Length: 433
Ligand code: COA
Image (tube, rainbow, N blue to C red; front, side, top):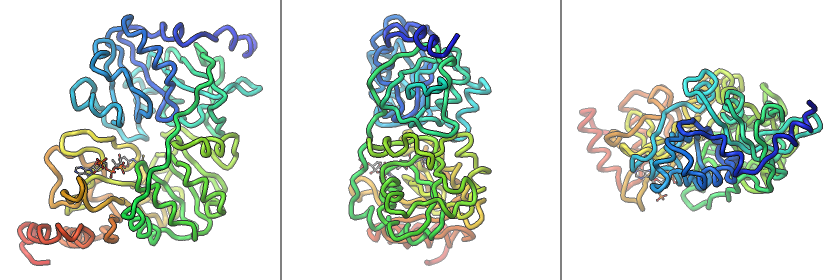
């Protein structure tokens, strides 16, 4: 059958499509801004037909109504990265968190460690050959769709057609729901005075011709504003947002010095505004790959002068970074932090940066601490850590002994906490600073 005929035959409404979900199924949802909100709403509206449907995804930028207490007999959320709409359900015991490096998530599905019954996703309309693009969310969404028994897709002209390893053929989609929705819009974060100080410190560590990864959160985003005077930067990252577009337009990001995928920006998902989504549409400079490729440390390390920029919640004297939990509470997820820090450390000329405000809770808590809080999860180990940056400067921990690490970290802690931290240093290391 011609793909055009298949497309017509398989086109349906969201209400009809979600009837193919059965009680006890595992449903994997398209990631982040690629979340198919129309299908999810239809699924939640049909809750009385289900019991114990497992909803699996990483970052949710949508409504996540299946996490609400009134829906918990129909759905249980299995989170691969907690976010604003799912965190409470995890803390309250209605949802669970499963740890995994981002690079390893596709294997959970393709190797049937977590066999996938249904994928709900959003794609671009088919091209003349019948291929739809996963657009802003290729990451685990494509491998999950390739291993699912049933694929249900929202097809919308608002999804950018991104290029690379980003396509699915119409014949592989079981139920097609044409709509006029689009990827979720994420406004750039507000950048404060402290972010500016941190951004300028990070910029000192970035050289002309470096290849960058920029993580999630306000901090990595704020750094971009301080790179306007750099030359020929490259991008090999898991995600990027609007700030990168400005630097391409300003001629700062050219990818001309990249030794691996030269001339191309490599990514696996996007979070931004219409400006970003317009930029990546049909843009041959932007190459999308699944996350088991972009985040594979051995692939990342092929880029010379790879610099990863991420953030953390708490770092102890040894340089262990708790970037995803606050005590026992899961705040976010491991994501690609360790993937990129490992990859950057194996790259020729590579460097990794973890940047964050020196304090939290309105200045009441130091984020540099003698030891991590009880229950806190180590996202990056002390043996992988390299640069830590706060508004007070840069600590280079590579090759430093334990007392030297503590000393370097205390020097960039908030001054209000330095005496307390020095006292702990004396107690632990039996010596003065
Ligand atoms: N104790 C208590 N509260 C803390 C804290 C601590 N040690 N550290 C931070 N907080 C609070 C902050 O005050 C802030 O609260 P607010 O929203 O009420 O102001 C909140 O936690 C978030 O902190 P912030 O630094 O603003 O977070 P962010 O949005 O910049 O994200 C991470 C930072 C670390 C959570 C995020 O980068 C992450 O999830 N990283 C792990 C995964 C990763 O790096 N992936 C790589 C690429 S995707």
